[in-house]
Image (cartoon, rainbow, N blue to C red; front, side, top):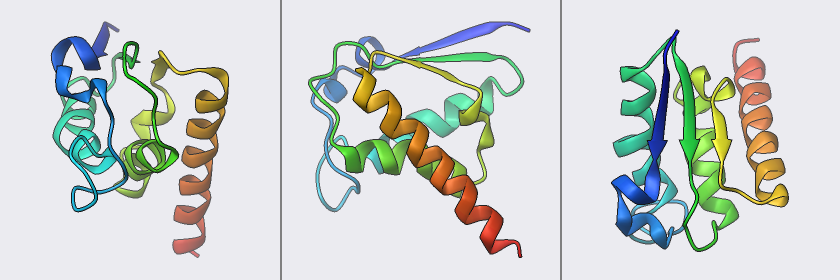
Length: 112
């Protein structure tokens, strides 16, 4: 199994200043990151060890994190649960975990 790293700011410098939840709310949104960058990366390296490096960004709005990471689960990309996410402070890390867990729980409720 190989390891692949998505270096967000190095590869997509415009995301140094993350936006809000959706494209309609701001540029560099969580939706844009998820759909245009994160999901294609997860698809390309499915089955490998994935690191998502977010170092260098100037703060992440909670709505960005929820849309990007919880949204992966909502779109059936459970690979995000296995990815190692670096570059977030402790509070942001906990939020991401909570958003992913919440999305998983919602998917379970849908299937009942």
